[in-house]
Amino acid sequence: MAHNYTAVIKQDAEWWIGWIEEVPGVNCQERSREALIETLRVTLKEALELNRQDAIGAAGGNFEEASIAV
Image (cartoon, rainbow, N blue to C red; front, side, top):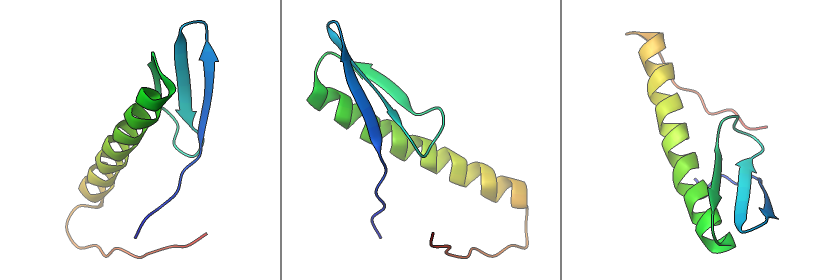
């Protein structure tokens, strides 16, 4: 299942900088817009996986996962 996130991006002098609105801490900078989009994509995937691992670790043993749509 694909999820969509919103990148806020802007050019600042020679750099492109961007943030993912929905996930605090996911921000990047690159020399081109295209490179920024790809770096944000990779960084977002890594952050989501780390958050997932942290949540499962915090739950300990006996837990279930439930899908929640908003």
